[in-house]
Image (cartoon, rainbow, N blue to C red; front, side, top):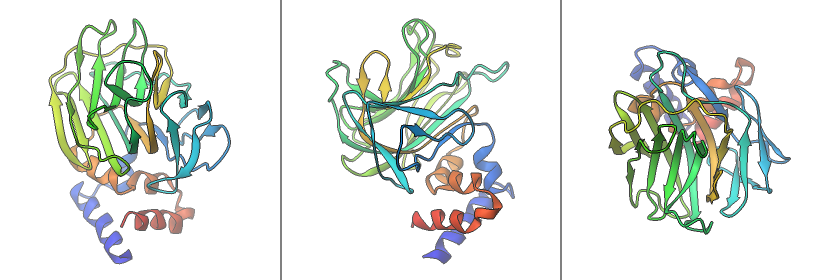
Amino acid sequence: MFRYAISSVFVAVILFGGVSLGQAQTDGLLLYMPLDDGGGDTATNTVGDDGTLVDSPQWVAGKFGGALEFNGTSSYVEIPLDLSPQAPGNGGALSIAAWVKVLEVNTDGHGQTRQPIVMKGGGGEWEYALYVYDDFGAGMSVWNCAGSGVAEPSASNTLTQGEWHHVAGTFDVTNGVTVYVDGAEVAQDAPGGNEPCDGTVPVRIASRVDGQFLKAVVDEVAMWDRVLSAEEVALNMTGALATAVESSGKLATSWGRVKYTY
């Protein structure tokens, strides 16, 4: 199996025409939280400010190493970063990816049919969210500031309850939103609100500021200020980002994490 893992990495490098594994996954990286801390009230972000655990999400085993389990009613992680995809000329380009094991849906009493994996925005400055829906679907929203313009494609029955799935979404103002589950495109929608706001609300994992909460185990949360290709989304599933951010002195650990995927 180890030989197969090595071969998979070489194939991934070939897919990118000789671009290294690290370059493929870290180019434009805004946020990477492997959620391997294993304890405490802080979730490490390898490329910026760390996240703060709110109302005690639980450290548990993840898809790769550790993860966090959220109770669906009150627990979340807040990351004090303004990750608004608003760089001049960027066209609002954004990608979000995470491994998610949905435990239950419709647990927060909020009255809406969705719960956020990753969310940024609030009243008057809605931005974006990667979602789980009550029909065990995956989707992504990107709003304009007022929330009146939105692209929100989703695909029902793409997430099996109690099983790990890789969920990713991408956006730019030309192509709109594309949603992937386990590396396959499952939904797409044209841009509905142009670029999202440059808002001030911090990023949250498993919560929305107006009372939506996700009951799930979440691992390997990442965001980029560009649109990942379908090949890059598939590469991210293998744990390539964890490998890319390891130093050369931790090569053995890196290979161990790649091996863990198979």
